[in-house]
Image (cartoon, rainbow, N blue to C red; front, side, top):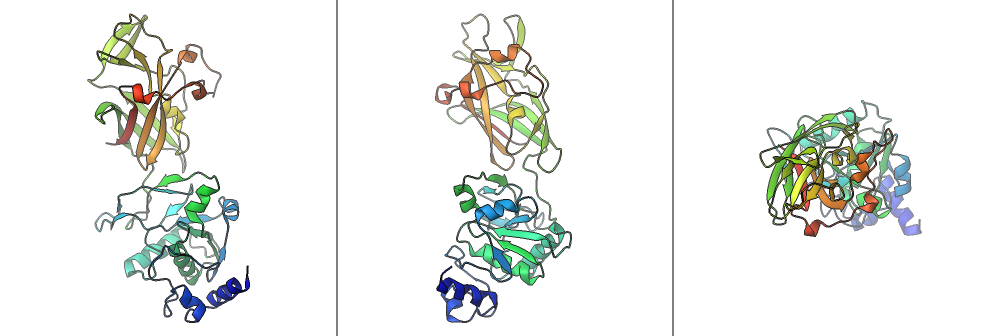
Length: 353
């Protein structure tokens, strides 16, 4: 740290917010908070907190509460139900809690109460709890929130100024998150209780093909129950087996039910069990039988909270003719290719009912 940075750190540490160094950062002389233009270069320290790097943040993942304070894009919290009306998804450090609007320089009584009661809840009213505050890089709202938490009496405050930008630039994955309800202090689940499944054609038209029920197993995993059905399917008897197929003059989509036991468990980072229950075999109408060589596998991703999108990959599903070893997943996606541009249904989408 150079001499100038040391002086800034000392000034901020002791609250000398009305001196020239503090004024350079547009810190309000009365409150000690940054009041506007929150996306701007930040100091190297925060009063009452410890500045940490990405590597240091990683070491705190298991024993600290990570709080993302990025303000959402949207209309704010619904005054009657408390859920946030957001128009853009947020991707954050896995396991982080999203508390919007608590990093502004001035908080209304309602927002101050929202901040205080959630810190109390997340810490089990223990002032020694470790909190890590962040948003994006060059984000004064995380600086404000860190200082505010320290003023509330929390002893172990860590400020991560690189935020999700630095986290991702260091090769770490981000995960979708929903903000804590403004009235109930609950976080909506990443997966809805019930969802509908649609195939999406090249023009963006959707065809309903079934439904999924999600249940919460624990903090990070969810159970699934998949039903693929609907009037769009017709019963076909192909190669001595019954299939449900979506017929078309050019290409048939025949549902291939995975024939072996699954845990039926997914997480935001692993949707494989769900992918295995959305397998199809393509067939030309002129062909007499059906061949799993023409398999279709939808590679899924959580595009935003409660919305899953899949991309069609083509490959050989004949590997399913033989039972796999217990607790293994036999389909090798390294042998599949993206031919979605040539498919009638290049995409699949799963969203709340």
